[in-house]
Length: 375
Image (cartoon, rainbow, N blue to C red; front, side, top):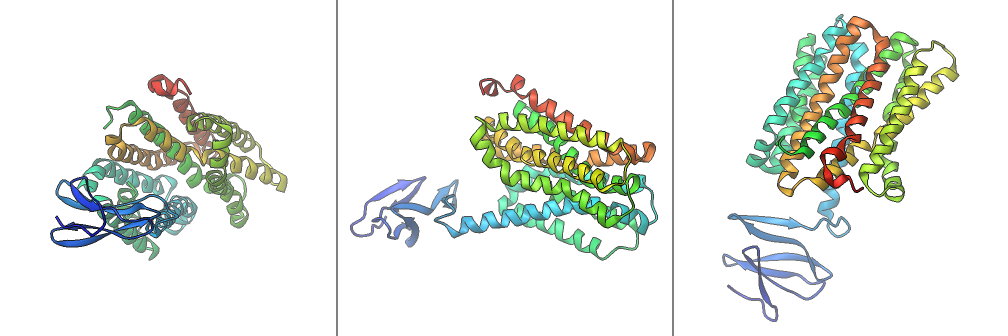
């Protein structure tokens, strides 16, 4: 093993490295080759270790020191922006699809059933794909499963069933139960995503069928829900840190506030007016309903990570989110079936019942996770 003059040699994870002075570049010698270790202020921010016979680069998570971390954060932001657009696009297009293909609400609801099949397969394959191809390989597969179907759908296929089948790989791409944390998190995400996507997908249809046929005006009202979710996730994170001792307590408060505003939505929906004030009230109720629902997803993920053993972080979280995706596809489909039988007037109650259900599940968390009882 070679040394660089004036520097001390040490071993990390089976790989020999050498220390260098602060703000300098250090090197390690491996297989007769000199390789660099990037350092900032005397601390390695990029280093290579040998793990089970594989050379792995480890990056510091400090985005201020490493451009690579900033690129990864930016990529994740774009990725979740696309996910959000995908969730809302289906809901916005439901009235158009029923008219363009001359099909019933029952038939168009099969879109959600096909997505459910994709999410189910994703929950079964998630860990295996990650083990075979790593995170990078899984991301490449996911991107291709999203890009190709979306291109086909954008070309307006001549038959509805072609459009519908394209939703299967979307559900698969956008997609351990012995641990109570995983079980509760899975149930919670199933109901939460079901409530979020059911409301976002069917709200526009509800407005057009029961309140007004003014598409432009109703689209503004329908946008209130997603606008609230976006602002809630941006702003309430700061409120959580200042006012609540834990993310669990914060989500408990936000969940009950969501129930209040969804109850207001149901009450407003029972009335039939066409005034600007009426639609303004509905806009406000749905905006704040979305505003307080918004941070529940990230908060629930934080609570799950805090209470899961490290070995279950990938498999447990991946499985739970994939099962949650099943709720995001299956419950909107179930809502479509009920709408076909009972009419669009049932939509507010369906959304409200799902919000109440996931709020109750969250309230029961401490009974099954002892660590939360002291919070």
